[in-house]
Amino acid sequence: MSWFNKISQETHFNIPKILYHATYRAFNNSILEKGLIPRYTCIWDDCQYGVYLANNPNLAESFCETSENVPDEYIDDIIIFSVDTSLLDSDKFEPDPHTLLDKNQNLECYIYRGVIPVNTLKIL
Image (cartoon, rainbow, N blue to C red; front, side, top):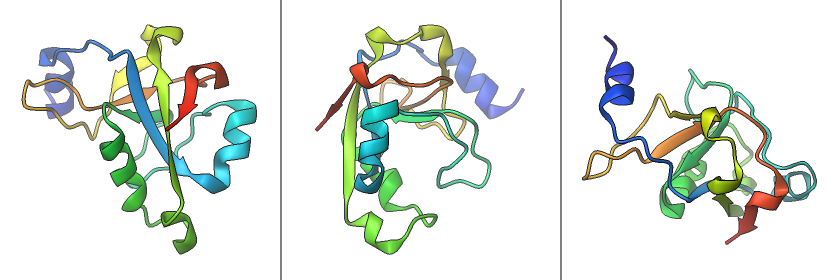
């Protein structure tokens, strides 16, 4: 059994009511028009299709800060969205395969396998 499958089975998988997604201000207008659209783009070479979410805004922001796949000027203009997960389909959530666990062995990162609509988003 892979470590990811083991974590998925053994981890407390309650989805928090609020999760966070960090991105770059250059994408703000598109997001506010279309929502967060699943992509393969992220900081790891083996990204999966989905929207990556974190359980706290600082963690979400740290992923944007370490990205090497964007122009340098984007790094200084990160925005963070809170996502109301109660308005989303819980069946579309999965543990992030690059997942981290908090001190209580709860997931810190998730993938949502669908579009996250605008009405679930707030800019922090």
